[in-house]
Structure formats: C-alpha cells, structure tokens
Image (tube, rainbow, N blue to C red):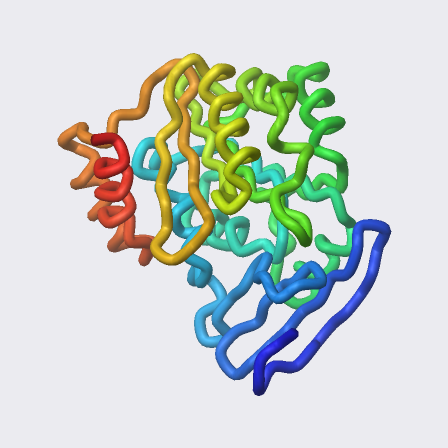
Length: 258
C-alpha cells in the first residue's frame, strides 16, 4: 500500500479503525488504514502547510484575517492547529476530535504543542456542539471542518442538525470553511444545499488542481463577494506572511463565481 522508501513509524487500532504514521525522506504522514494522507508535514519545515487542501481552507483568512476564537472540527495530525498558533498569536483554538488515539498520535509524532491557547476536546462533534449551545460558552469567528474517516467525510458533519449548530455558534460575520470531497457527487451536492439553506446565502467553492477536495466557504449573515477591491491586496499581504498562495485561491473563487 505504501511506496518505495517509506517506513511505518507507528500503528495503532481503536474502535474506529487503524491509525498509521508513515515517513519517507521528505515527509511524515498520518493515515487511517489507506494510502490517503489525513495529515502530512515536511521534515524540513514542520510549520509549513504541506497539503494543498489545508492551505486552501485558510482562504478564509482573506475574509477574516484575524480570527480570535477558532473552532477546529477534526484534529488529524494538527497541521492547521500548529499553523494557526504560529501565525495568529492572539487566537484561541478549540479542537474537537472523536478519537483519543488520533490526538495522542498528533502529540507523539506530529509535534502538536502544549499551548495554553489550545484546548482539545475528545468528543463526538454532535454532542459537543450541543454542549456549546446549551452552555452559551462562546462563539467563534472561524470554524474549520476537516472531519474525514478512512472512506470519506464523516457523516456527523454533513446533516442539517450539524449545520444549524454551526450557524448558532458562529459570531455575526463569522466564517465556516469546510473540506468536502467531490468524488461522492450525491453527498457533495446535498451537503452544499444544506449549507446554503441553513445560512440563507450561497457558499463559495474553491476547487483544487488534480484533487477531489472542494473547499466551501460561507459567512453568517453576509454574502461573501470575492470581487471586492481590497481583497486582492489583503491576499497578497497575507501570502507574504503565511506562504499560502492566497491570491491564486482568490482568483479561483472569482472564476467559480462568474
């Protein structure tokens, strides 16, 4: 299943399946029992977002450049968490991960830091969303959803109750950025329709070259417009500080909106 020169550093099985860490000379990757990379980092630059879909998810920063309260659904190896903590010193992150073994693997093999700005919750997101709603514990400027299992996107993040909960805990003008999989066309289209119906406006979509990932962005209470003049200047400035090709992603969103 794995390529020449790769070695297995770690393997553990929980009630949800296999978790493996695979390394070659250049990178270390997290796998859930298949060759698909759930998370990956370059050994020479651990803080760089190596997987293009993770960089595309942060096209949300073009519209929300300084989110202070962030919810991440699906921890994986913690690439997004590490990046956000490194580049947004004033942010606070809640990460919700179903599998305790994934969290431990991220700590042991992917340099997930101990940081007072990060709280990891080992919980089913359906239960956790309701706890946030019931406790009025706070609302978020940015919610990132990257919740995949070994055979595709988790069913817990594609139904109407999930999106209603996300809508409720987002601040006004807060952004949802979600990694979807276009290969399952029926699920993809139904998920987009549910997002649009819940938020009352149209999600922006960002497709990636030669990838089945489609990043979906939507704002609470406001339609995102990629044609606003100041956005390209912001994207260029953020590209300099983050090493993310945000002007390219903005052009992709504009082309999809034409």
